[in-house]
Length: 213
Image (cartoon, rainbow, N blue to C red; front, side, top):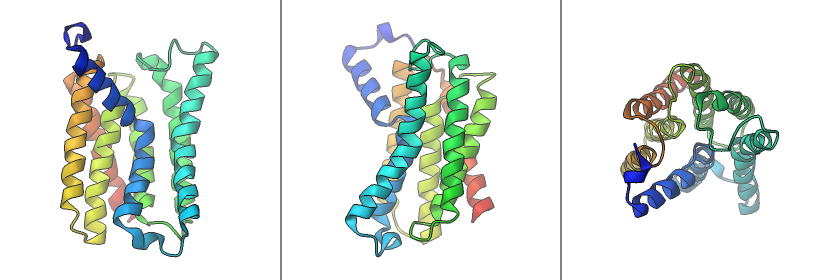
């Protein structure tokens, strides 16, 4: 969609939403959500330790992949940090895959954190693995993959815990639609690229849930 035809307020809002719900931040948001809606899974952990665990998720799934992209930009391996072309996305895809796999590997030995993290981390790992393949053909939406995966994971949280979190699911659906719309407003993504991203993220979480749990 041509950004020049968009109202400045829409462009600003779309960019702000895209930054707030950047794919790298989604694992941290999911971890924080689990703390809020299923606190019994963190029983016995004091607030400081809980903050440190949240920070460690951010460190491994957001900071390190983001810093790697920053280094690539500084080394002139990519033109900018926005990864606007399919070619620029290839190495960041593999970097993210490594850290997502590492988080899944660690989650298998977690005894003080929710078991659902196992399928969530595995789901984002395989979605990134599939995403890098699809990236050879189309510029699949990374935001779509992240939000589709997050929404599906939250639904499975409700199923696994038999918890009535319908308001959380409704909010997740709304945010998924909001972020998808924002990407169409402020990026050069097509509608199919966003839909395919959502679909890949969702299917991979479904597969991970039934494979891991």
